[in-house]
Length: 244
Image 1 (cartoon, rainbow, N blue to C red):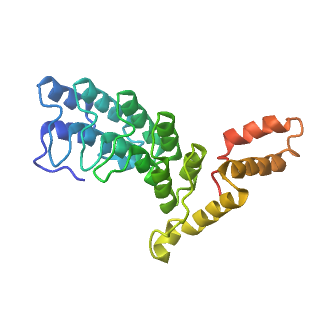
Image 2 (cartoon, one colour):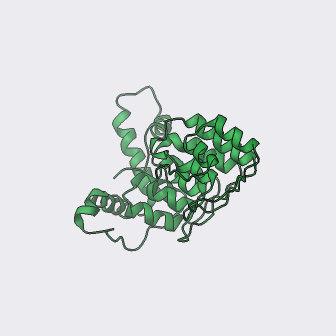
């Protein structure tokens, strides 16, 4: 999405993440929920340039905060989804503060987009494990649909978070596309992962076995640590249950 000559000044300010320019626009009394090209300034502050999540993160957070304080609607749909949908689908952990800010400002974690998919589904499909965890902790529902999308897109670690929270494994796993595409999406690895969970009996049993394997590897190297303490250490340092 490139800046266009006809974007109004408030949109240009948020596209540039220019805090001072945005402050001037808000002081002028501009409509903070102005809609242009199916977007709002808040949507644009979240999504524009988000492929480079680490860049100007503090300016992005400040722009979002200013818009919300000025009365921007946090529930408006922009290009088919809410601002939280777009933030949650970002692939970088650097975007976690944006997700946190939106949730703390009252964004509905169970809002649905124009296709009926939840914020959790967006995070599971293309976002980070941290985003999935944040949403589940905030009360997001729709675990099974989110798991389906995580499976289709090869997001094993997102699957682990959803399964741990109670999502049910689908009876059948279908490849997302012809072989070259599904190979790139990690579908063979996903099938192996799901197969290992089924072989263990359920996800909790698989996670327990994974923990025990790691403890068995490290216990001889750290004999001074009790096995239960080492178990907690590996849980913290490794993504227990989130590997093939």
